[in-house]
Amino acid sequence: MRTATGLLAALLPLAAGAQDGIDSGSTAWIMTSSALVLFMSLPGLALFYGGLVRAKNVLSVLMQCFAIVCVVSILWLVCGYSLAFAPGNGFIGGLSKAFFDGIGESAVSGVVPETAFAMFQLTFACITPALIVGGFAERMRFSAMLLFSVLWLFAVYLPVCHWVWAEDGWLFARGLIDFAGGTVVHITAGVAALVAALVLRPRTGFAQTPMMPHNLTMTVTGAGMLWVGWFGFNGGSALAADGNAAMAILCTHLSASAGAAMWGAIEWLKYGKPSALGVVTGMVAGLGTITPAAGVVGPGGALVIGLVAGFVCFNATHALKHALKVDDSLDVFPVHGVGGMLGTFAAGIFAATGLGVFSGQGYAEGVGMGGQIGVQLLGIAAVGGWTAAWTWGLLKLVGLLTPLRATAEEETTGLDTTQHNERGYDLQTL
Image (tube, rainbow, N blue to C red):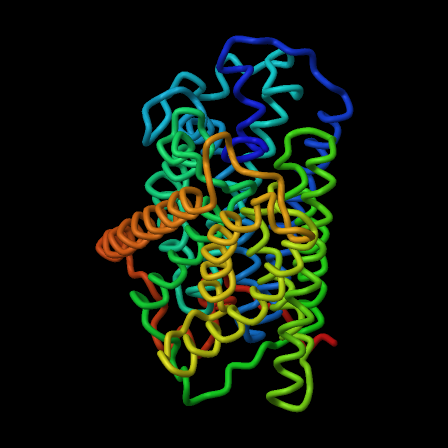
């Protein structure tokens, strides 16, 4: 089995100074995967989130996702990639690759150009802060959102990315299994969204006024794009066009299908009818939960992970909103946060080779299930705690510099008009 993660296994030859030949097939696959993951952010996630908010806020959500991709891309070139992947210490990389210094066409990361690897990782850095948008949708000012996203990238995403996926990262050294981002993407985004929802407090009228999605057709369309794009998210994390990538794609699809089926079945039994929103939410739960395990488990394990994801994330969503009265507007924490934690834990179980049809690819040499589960729990706790503390601190800091949330009057009018002087729909002209 590949040690710790499929993403960085291919970096080991580079760290040792080897210059293997570039494989054109693998390079083409990573370039395609980069496009697929970007497709998840724009338009996939933007449409998925946009349809879930009220009509007066649809453009604000689309704009937030779009702006995050643009700003993060520039920062990734300046120093983001270097801080995440350049040699440093156990907690953060150095600046030796700032502005992609030394990264040319001939530089390789395993069997693909380092430019392809850097671009692939860029798309991960873009979608992670964009996921957080769902936690404070319909009430955070655009200027505050932008400043928070930039600071959060440096304080949370880049350090955690280095911990988990860089060869000298402390969680990588301990053998944490996170194939494609259960900790780096989903736990960080989910926990940050929960903290943001608590700090910003509920939307005006929450729990008293219905806040129904304005366009489920848009949401289902975005969900389909996420499903397709996730093949690049997980399959590309093998960093090669090989059997590991194929297995990751197969497991991704099976888990998504199982998560959707489980969520729909629960709704059918509980409410008498399954909903389109429930099915696509279950699908996203299955996708997020299989992400850290996609390249280390088998199809049987992926099926179980997806079914459990649908059940656990359904109950987490309802507990958060109805029992705890937390206004995580678009259910980022119960779907992505809980799913990421569940999947990271499950990877430590279903990577085992002695589970019959549910067996995975095996552990690193000398590591047993108990030891691996311990490492997985350590990763969950460390990443979750770091994310929660820094997110709370950054939100408080941003609040001192500029108002965090819109006024009650601005919320009533809608962020499309008050933040961008536009409207998503002009019914008078139809």
